Length: 375
Image 1 (cartoon, rainbow, N blue to C red):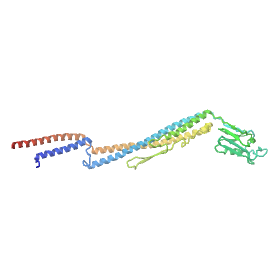
Image 2: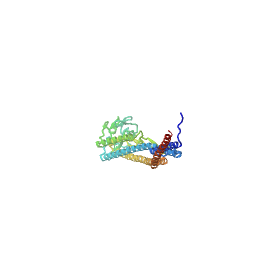
Image 3: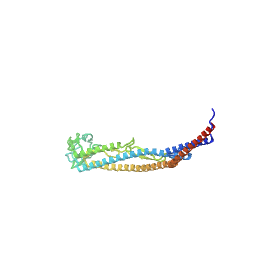
Image 4: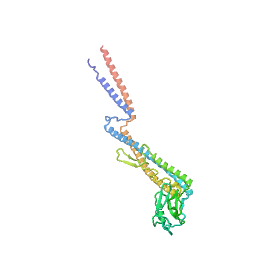
């Protein structure tokens, strides 16, 4: 089959149509994407420069998730501190109420024999006539202090033995010329030598102040809640009040970073102990008040540290967001198409296409007329 021969004018017309079609496709693609540079073929320098800017902007944007998570953890910790500070304020109010209530009278077990600290225990007058080996026991129900008579010992040795017994919380002293034991709890006196000191083997019951006892119970409840709030102040597995720390990258290559150090917070670490002796003495209430003041100061310092870190991270977050916007805008400016110009180009190309089609049609009509004359 022989090839179809086209005239030079026809070939020129087809070439024009093909070129116009390619230009229209390019222009339409720019209008759809909004970019004048869509591949390295369009402009190698602009394409790869814009790609580099877009890549850096994407890396910076990925940091924002970690920064937001760190801010959430700090906010949770700050709210936890705020809640604990509120509980400490309530606890201090309880100590004030306790101090306005009368302190309970201490339980007292006193002898009936006149003595001094230097009175000898064994032998005869001026000694007490006690026998070596006899015992004096003083207990509080859970702990007992014991003294055993030794030749030549004095009443002072008895007091030293009782006062030196750990966790007994019973004070031995000379009051009104008599050996006396005092405590903010029950006192049980016994032993084979009690009669020599005019003591009776019996239990002297302590009568607590009901109001202070109730306030101490409320204090212990608030103390437990302090620890619970600290444990619940975590988010996404990170709890700065449990001593966790966050290492946060601030730029895309990690050369700039910061570490947020957590602090373990609980009633124990803050030095807030359970209400001693059910707050039956002013000393026990004042000790609790002192510990609450110190705990408040400690929390304030922790909150200040978190606030400083929050300011640094917030500033860096704003900077990163602005830098990402600048990179994206610069990338867009390098590759963006002039939409008005491209739209005008498309209209012009459509006109050229119509004109080329019309010209080709005329050329084909001329060839057909010439062919008919030969018939």
